[in-house]
Each structure stands twice: as C-alpha cells, then as structure tokens.
Amino acid sequence: MSALLTRRQTLASIVGGVAAGALSLDRAKAAVSELVWATWDSNAHPEYVDPFKKETGTAIKLSFLSSEDAQFAALKTGAAKDWDVVNPGLNGTWRYIDAKVLQPLDLTKIPNRQYMYAPFKDTDKVVGKDGKTYAIPYLWGLNPIVYRKDKYSEEPTYATLFDSKYKGQLAMRDYALESIAVAGLFIGVPRDHVFTMSDAELAEAKKALIAQKPLLRTYWQTIGDLTNLFATNEVTCAFSWRVPFDALRDKLPMGMAKPKAGIFGWSDCFAIPATLSDDKVAAAHAFGNYLLGADYASAIAEIGNYATSSNIIRDKLTHEKQEAIFVDDLSVMNSFMWPVAPPNYSAWLKIWNEVKAA
Image 1 (cartoon, rainbow, N blue to C red):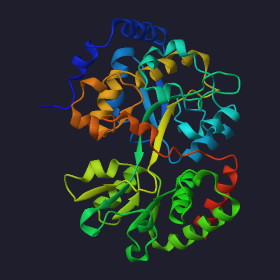
Image 2 (tube, rainbow, N blue to C red; image 1 turned 30 degrees about the vertical axis):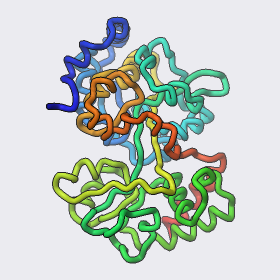
Image 3 (tube, one colour; image 1 turned 135 degrees about the horizontal axis):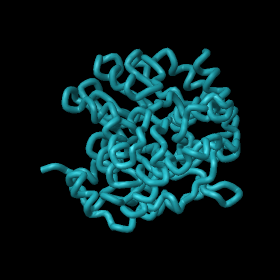
C-alpha cells in the first residue's frame, strides 16, 4: 500500500475555502505563461511543479543554484534578472532583506500559509525592520553525513571527514557557512557557539580545513554531482544532503549518520526579487501558495523524502513515511542546529576562499 494517498484523494480532502482562494489566485495570474524559479535541483523535479501548470496555465522553468552565496551575489549585482522566484535559506534571509533585493509579500495571497507548522510560520527571520514579511519557509530537513556502510566499521562523525585514513574518499560542500561550522565542531567548539566563533577559533577552523583539503575528493556544489560520485565509488563519506542516501540505498549499502556534536537543520524559503515586473507578482504569489499546498507536499514527500513547512498532508501519511521525512515527532524541529549567517560573514567568506586557494 502506498505511503501516500493519491494526489486526487489528498486534494479532495482540503477545505473548500483554500480551494476557492487558489482559484482566485489562478485567475489573477492567468496571463503569465512562465515563471523562472531559482532553486536547488533536489527541490524541483518537473513532476513536482507540473500540477501548477495544469491548474493555472503557468509553466515553471527551473534554474538550479550552485550555492547560497552565488544566489545572493547574483541578486545583489543584478545578474539574476531572469529569475522570477528565488530560494534564500531561512537563516541567511536577513542578508537579502538588508540588501533590499527582495520585495515584501502580500500574505493575503498565500492562503495555505495557515497550515504551516508554528516554528516556520512564526519565525522572525523572514521579517524586516519595517515589520513586513519578505520570505516564507516552505521546505526543511537535516543535512547528515552520508556514507558507505561497507567501508566504515563505525558510524562516521565529523572527525571522520578529517581522517587521513580515508584520503581521496571524502567530500565537503562548497559552502562557507556549513563547512567552517563543521570544522568548528571538529576542533571542539560547542554547538551553541559555532556560528559566533571568535577570531581565534575561526583561525583554528581554517587550519583544520586547510589540513583537510588534500584528503578530499572534491568540494561538491550540486547534490546530483555528489550522488554520482557515490554511485561510481569515488566518494564513500561526505557532509551531505540526504539525496544520495535515498537515491542509492537500493543499489549500494548506504548509511546516514546524525553526529552527536550537532545535526544541521535547513529550511528553504520562497521569495520574490525586488525587481520582478508588476505583471508577474500575482503569479509569483500563487506559486508560493502552491509550495505550501497538497500537490507539492505529496510529490516531494513521495519522491524526494522531504517535508514542507505545511501540515496539509501530514495526517494522511503512514507512520513510516512520517518517520522518513522527520514529521513523526514534531519536536525535532526545535532540536536541530539551524545555521545562522553571522554578522561577520564576510570574514567567513574570506577564510573559505583562502582555504580553497591553499
């Protein structure tokens, strides 16, 4: 028996008021033939967004990101003129708001927001100093260590990623915030202090990362690339997203470790660039509402093993599926380490560039 009800059954159970709201949004943006969504490749398979086109007539063109920092830089420099909807990470959203590269959202045009879990709905990380909301968390999960069970006698920890025994088999993400934080945990910085490290601690983290660099097969940028490296036996352990575990566990002995030092939680947000033309704004809001709705939640839970920030389908999932996407025990939302870009993040970026150049 499927872990999910059919999409038709799920949608039939959604209250009429939300359906009516969605129809009004559809009419408002009917003239828009296409929106370009800048997001991660794991968030946006065509089957995740095809229902939006069927329901509204607006196609979603996918533009995949290489890094959070590259997305921010593109918006700040004006190099992202083709993007209609963007994907800032929850804990770095303040950078986008302060840089004035996002426009405030009209929450009345996103009725599915009422179904959001409280930690995401009530977060102040997406609210500007003007009191306006500039982004909405729509997807979340954790970033584990993914590894080959047949290559490791014990479950890996962050120390494994710095162990010369596994030279050439390791991979780290090409992302300053998480990679420097991993190094901080490795050198013993407490989890509640790792995103506010002192200059001395950052210097030690930098030393650890420079020593680690020769041990790595690569710094990965897209999760598809990392999955391929696991599939071809070029990488056996990596700080990762869960995608390689899910994609390969039926073919290879894959494991997913959750280090006791701290598990990195993540949340992606829906946001609209400040430069978006007025004729597309209603369509962009309608797409934001779709990301909190039953179609997207059903597809990404079934195919991608991810949970949205909405509880709209939670009670219709089997316990096994709830457990797989971490919504069986909702307290987990409060136990993750949520990466926070510190005020001195420019110093972190400088360190990261120096590590990669070493």
